[in-house]
Image (tube, rainbow, N blue to C red; front, side, top):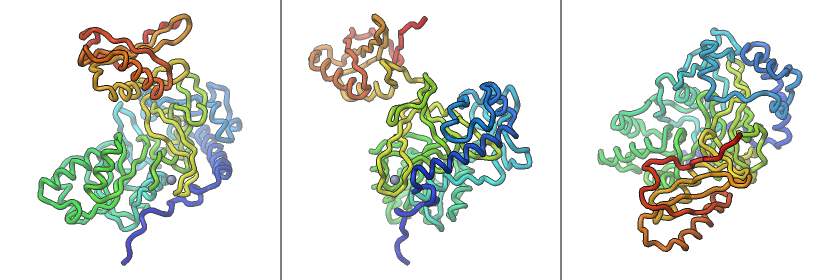
Length: 427
Ligand SMILES: [Zn+2]
């Protein structure tokens, strides 16, 4: 038997490699259909459309979605409590529902009996999973939908699923060895924990285990961790992005460089302050529309920030890529028209070990935003002028906004202070 080709091909070739214009027309049709369906069957959605004076006939293409308000995921708890259980957003009756999932909040979610969505399947296929693979699902099977939907997606792809769930590292390692499991689904950190456990049990990670591919999500995947795990375990690791309600929105292919947008959904990247689409390449909130007939979520704001890149990919997929999750909307500050996120500030400070504590202070002087990085130094005798110019250059490069540096006496920044202190007053 020859080696399995895990690097080429697509789950939905006609859509994944589609000419962008043809994809646009396809999605326009799907948007018109789902909006008309949700308006007719989901009273909560109808009320939302009525509130802006929109009729189904007004939304017949992707661009028309801009007429409809964004529903923030963070508001779902409130919306559902006002109209238990699904806030009027379910468009079928209970006979269509196989399970009700409960996400933290609590947020209730009707899981469709048919689960026709195949976006996680696209992701698994792009990550190298192939029919006949035995795959161990180590996400949580308790109340939340993600692990169940992955299990369904593996089934659709022709893989064998082991519903392992979380914890039990020793048993999990034994299962991997006994069944010669090829596929892992879980967080990167749990994969690292399993590798450690396998070594502690005296296993050779290459000879005793047969891991080939990993699908990771729900956690940041630093490249250093990916590289070390791939080498240790002799496997290929690819990541995906989605949410419990929306399912898969993007996934990495073999060539990486970001996560291709999944097919059969609409992802918009919106300026969280103006509510308008950002320019291509700029950072904004991920807002998605899915075509689930039972639970049609239309313009759900995830609260996650990303940007899109439109470079051609060698894999042949034509969808743009999400550059990653760049932060959360509720932590972002806009300075001189640019979004500044705590992780960006941390990235700047991390390059200067001389800086012991820091806080980015945003103020307003003469109708101009002023950004100042307040720093305390580990060694007060450090060359301040050199540090200052290095820090200011880095601030400009990473945050893309000019900022100044202010060295402070030790003890002036409180322990555990927030990374960005926005002191601007707007009246
Ligand atoms: Zn690609």
